[in-house]
Image 1 (cartoon, rainbow, N blue to C red):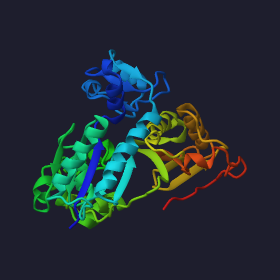
Image 2: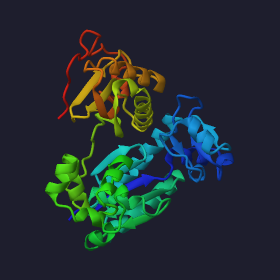
Image 3: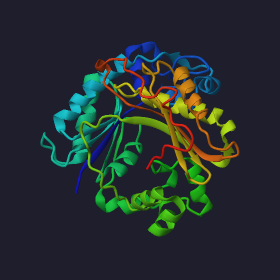
Image 4: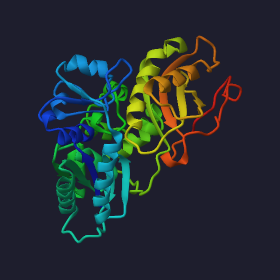
Length: 366
């Protein structure tokens, strides 16, 4: 039986700004550049009260919270703090799997520092983080990664929550299905159409029924409804790609994908700001109404330097889809791949030039 922690820094970027500038404390802080093409990197809890969230367009955040104080992000500073936090993790276990600058999984089944329980280890880690950085973190303690991630959000900010093996079924049964990682608004509505509102409702469906309706995602839902997650904590995992996807309520033609592509580009770009590595390859993913998957990708000589550049490349890739004009699409995704360390250099030859870019049918993803 594993003992897994999910440690998540509280409103990380905004908290760093409030720590370093006392005049910002207690005020609604939005970490973002101003402008129509900017997205929110982080929002303080004072700003979240107004509905401001990460990955939201900055102009919308400004409408929701007119008194918000916008602070341009300083990723060098955030990464320095993240390294401090990671050093604390490594004092307790070598099995640390960073998910971003502000969160990680830890396997403390056999901790390096003797501890009476995983709960006590989480408490110690959070205290050490505060002593070293003057920032708070929340923790989830559970038998697997799926449960630990849900638990870390339970007593935020500056809290922790434990789900013991014997408590898994009782904890999950009343849980809204929207709390399951990966279940977005569209999936939640489709589940609601089946009369599924809670994990307990979901558990009433067989594996075959869920796979028939949702494919591989249905199998994942079946496992999650039962608290099953056998994934180990994998240290030194390198970021390979970061993306955002949206499944439409109604299938749409290619000509109407401009705004969805822009929205997904904003979300993906915000997520890429949380990694220390640099991505070079822009990827556009489409799924037709017949569930046919297409991808188009392009690697410029230098990594996209801004959201505007990233979005422009994604939009240009749409123009290289050669299916009939009346083809309808049910999903769009935009991502960044080909991540490398910063010291590897910013310039490499393009992997795809105009002639080499995929044309015609598709470049399937399995």
